[in-house]
Length: 277
Image 1 (tube, helix red, strand yellow):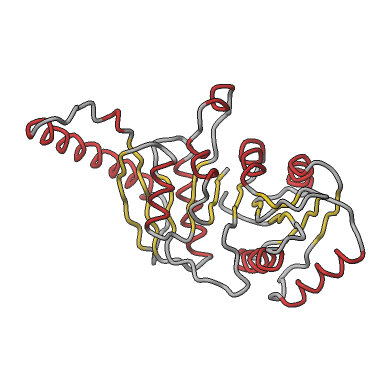
Image 2: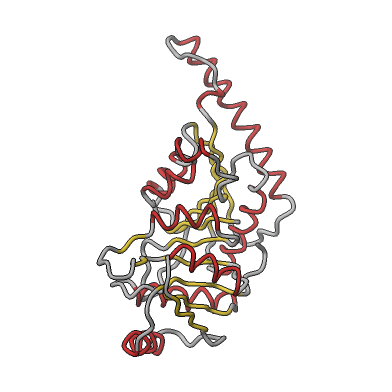
């Protein structure tokens, strides 16, 4: 995902509609992309008027917005629009199920991250006034998708004018293979941790060799713990502005029973999250 030409935002007439739209407009202008808005539900004159009023108060879009109005099941409508409009990035804020007062993102995001063909940006703290993005945290785990995810995080950092990126290498506790119960085993565990950290740092450095990250401060951080949960906790305590994650791989029956690493993130979004496809 090195180019973003078309961005789709789900439009729900929720209390967050205005900040969600303002954020989407800003991001579109930063990437010089076209904005497509999709509302799942009935098209009414009032909704159209409300939408145009909010857009008139936002930044002027470099390219005119296209709005899609379609009734149906939210996930199906959004997935279909992503394909039809050839979307590169889907932005999700609060979504409303028509005729219900409940706004939600988690359950919809779970389904979309498994099925959408494009990357997804989940907004938990949209703002009418632009809040500078100062720190991006990105997963650096050993996976075929990680290089593209790191590339995308650098691309976003440049467009969002963010100067700090931390690549987090999540290492499973099972790799230590040492039970710490005395000074000797503690020393052994410390040595193994250092070796694992050096191994992961070298792997990430090899990825970074092929990425233009000029003017961006990139740091590496090894964390021992549960994949997904550990990086989410790290992003939260470091007050990161954006967490960038690999999209889940093929999801089978076992993944629906046992939490996938992305499930930990979606169950309690620590900050805005970008899931890279």
